[in-house]
Figure 1 (cartoon, one colour):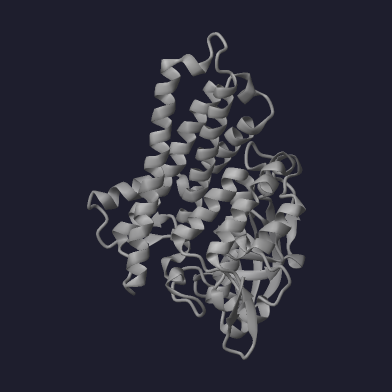
Figure 2 (cartoon, rainbow, N blue to C red):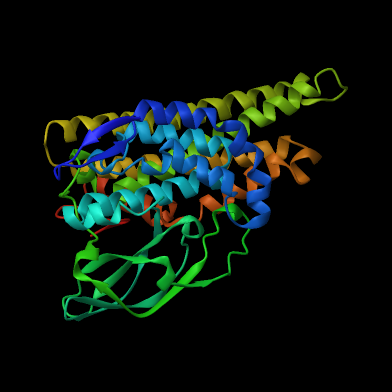
Length: 392
């Protein structure tokens, strides 16, 4: 870690991106070992959570001026692939906490951000796609609503949630201490059980004006050009990287199973059909990864030049995410069919299979994304722009 000077004659401890990536890789055995426990408990085991905070993984998108790593898009994808390879739920929770925490740091006014980031082990999680109701009052808003899919909320100090200002209709993100939130313990699902992505409610909770920001914000108060991409593009790089990490683990697990049974009569190791399908799956995963990273290399170049992000790159980003997600879905089907009873019974392959089928249900990989992408790629979207996950 390095010391970063901030404007207010104080210093904060920041994280070096390379060191965070190194430390995340070193966490593999810890994260992998707690995967089954996370699945059973509906939350990430505390030793893993502590290690994620200590290593700087949760600070992936926190501005350097507030003590974070402020990783580049491709660095953050490396991080999420690494952690999702070890345990899909852990990777998912890390990207959820990392994004909501980092965006608050980037878009809050500096004084409020510094006060917030003085919170010990600060973590922000919540829901940004289903808007609640924010009634303007003197000094802020009264926030009410019910939201779903609060990935990582059980490991957070604060809530990030979307609501529409009832006076202006503007969508904003509000940051609220978790003590003011009512949790609904209803995360009984097929996959990604370890994320604990429960529902929650708020009823007329006062949120100061300083603790919210427009959901379409792209001009950071603190931090660099990274934050100009907007939350929709952040979500695409996060979920695309998650899919790539899980897909890689699935293929590696299957290869290990097949090698262990090599020499047995009728085994997959001697099957030409299996070898052909495995090669096809390997190439499909590598192609999906190459596309996603190529798109983000172009986006990083645009940001570095200080230019606005072209609509076409935003489209390709969302399409590349979908390609990564559904490539991993196809790989999961192949691995499950090829894994025999080892895939059927409780174990790593079964858990990965279930987690993939949880991940594909996220809105960022829904059919409407590719439908909109296809219209833009075909030249049928003049005057449109991406608003989160919709072309409007």
